Length: 579
Image 1 (cartoon, rainbow, N blue to C red):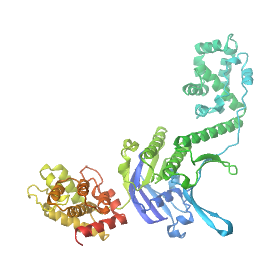
Image 2 (cartoon, rainbow, N blue to C red; image 1 turned 180 degrees about the vertical axis):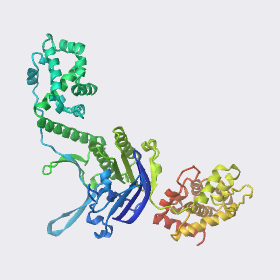
Image 3 (cartoon, helix red, strand yellow; image 1 turned 90 degrees about the vertical axis):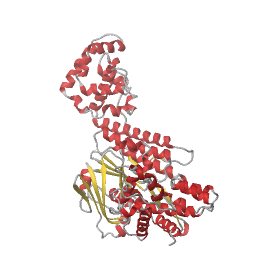
């Protein structure tokens, strides 16, 4: 299945938006947009759904107006599923989980009405704490019930405290143990064993040599035995079988008590898992997140110190990893939409690798279980930072949410393609069209690509076009982002060139390749360069070398949409072009 559209109405900052996307199962699906665009509104739309409807908090209504009807729709393989105040077609088909940082303000009243506030991380609930219960197992009693050779039964006291027991009996219908056929076959084996003489080791070897087929004819027990041997909880198939026999008898004697003991063992396993997880991430001896049990609500939670006692990066990676592990532990019966809402703003390179590792681990786990998962990652970061790590092999699906200027970049893209594919004009385009130069250049008509405007044959014609598109951009009109990139580059280079005093320096500048190296050259002459020239490297350093199928427009549009970037470009272009 492919999710091809997300439509949102009246949720937080979104009045009505329709996003065309390509969200695929088992792929890291990036939804990229600048800060302030409304990504948190998308996360809120998904997190506000219960199984029956959308249930928005008062603050999450658009303009905080509860009269405005909230709605979330997704289109899956052409079918539109909608959630609103009266229905939830999305949750009928999908499970949904949203992961975010959990930061929340908390006010505290003091003496005489004074109030202070702190930023805290909301505790993460892991599970309910079940009633403590133990297995009613006594080795001597179990051996006596078996018969004269009960000594062959291993003592499973330690196994009943071992998390591997949970895996060994997973999916096994222990209730079938009391069936007449199984009991009859089992009694036959027990009678044969009790007729033998010798030590436990001797009798076990006899069973291995003579009764193996009979043991395997009881899959309810032999399957458990096989797993116990595989997990290292039994040394042989015979030991595993008689361990499984005792486990099944415990269940048959008291099914409810057995289930309660299993629940308690699972709880202890989960608790130990999260304690170990937090310990592995602990990088200091100061305040740290802790696994705690709440006495009133009987919940197991991850409790965080106050936000200022934990670095932003530590907080984000712990929050993320704990919630991802919770996803793995809980599983999902339906296809899962997993929304990760910018919890990695402060992650360094190592934690960014950890983030990608855990996301891909979930993808692989769901794939192994033949369960569909749609990881959706909301980010303002350049998608390029993800390509060096784990996500690479899973083929990231990149979706830029900011609307693209319509079709205006097609001719500029053809010019980029011509620069990289036509050797006879490559150097000229690079030197005179794509960078600042004091001279103009014209390419002969017979060498000029027929799919490009004829007036661009002269570098001045192209510069005129790029500056006109720059003017449209600064006036918030529809524009060509690639042309704006070139105009910005030429403006900065012209300003840098103007800072040089000696002719030989200016000649060297014109021969230097790439804008970054040109500006470094200017700096090396001792000139004091305004910081804005380097800050705009975010735009002019955009990689514009041709690659078939690559989206050049969307990432650039996202950056150009930021109001500060627009102002910086305005200042540089006004200075460069004397406006």
